[in-house]
Length: 115
Length: 111
View 1: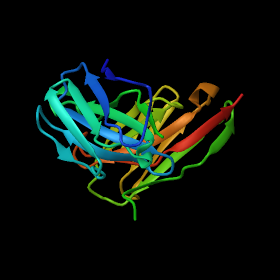
View 2 (view 1 turned 120 degrees about the horizontal axis):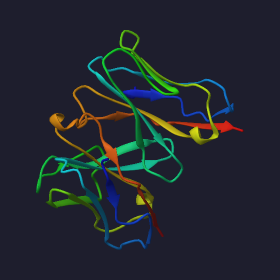
View 3 (view 1 turned 90 degrees about the horizontal axis):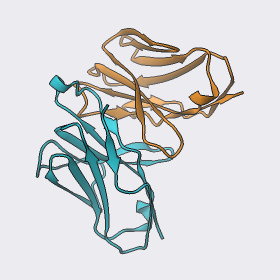
């Protein structure tokens, strides 16, 4: 079974703090994704990565950055947290087609509250 | 117009009922169709995956794709309280790296 883990289930931070959300997958997947999920808006893609040290902007990258130094690990960074970044953050991974990579596998999510 | 439209519900049904969840889409290039189930405060988990048109059955769950109408459905037979969750449809033109999600339908099955 694919396993995607996220470093924290719940996180409370103050406005202006730098926040790190970490995601690790154990299936040697090439592709990793960060989404945020808000009521009525569904899942919105923040950033994704096709390979180590590679990143691409998604639909809502403003206020976020990412890091992928190792294949199994993809970090989301909020440089200066703001209250409008309070949300559920979901990490996902997928493999190449030869690995059955026609879908994404999600982690349990991190519920971030910025006060 | 959104690429994928999904009725947010909420939908409440009695235990044992047949549930029908639906999504419509506008992009005729979509070929891969998925349904995810998300329990409260958890991440989505893949429930059903289909390629192109047709039906796929897995236990009490049936996924149906009608590409001519740009319409997909998930049917749940003999619904159980444990089916209470939010169901997300997702689709893509060429696989996992470019998924378009519906906003999700919240389902409650009442014992």
